[in-house]
Image (cartoon, rainbow, N blue to C red; front, side, top):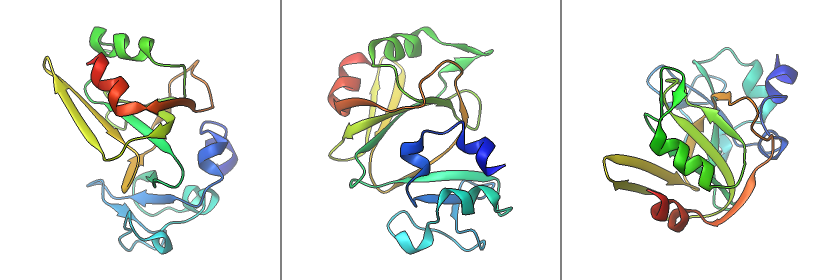
Length: 165
């Protein structure tokens, strides 16, 4: 199972010990079932340990500023299996990168290398987009077919996203 899961997640992520499980209420968990914290590396595990654990509902990745990973979270971006026009406009304007469907099936996570000084929620025109790079964990969903297994560069993620919303 770990090898199968690893084939669907970029090696840039699976190679780092920043993995947690999560509960049905989306609370991060250690592999022993105790609570994990996004600011406590001792509560995280390596990828293989987390994907073989039966604790909780699935796996998540903890974002830290040291790694320079940025996640653009598009909530309610998919309806009836199709990307909504506002989301398509954002995705098409960004460099091709690893993208996954969120756990709900209606959201999208776009993963980049870059920087965001502080997490941001950008809301305009009835569209809300979140951009995170530190002290958050992201539940790993299903890779969107045809997207790369690599992370593209997006140096000023918050500024770029704000200009697109």
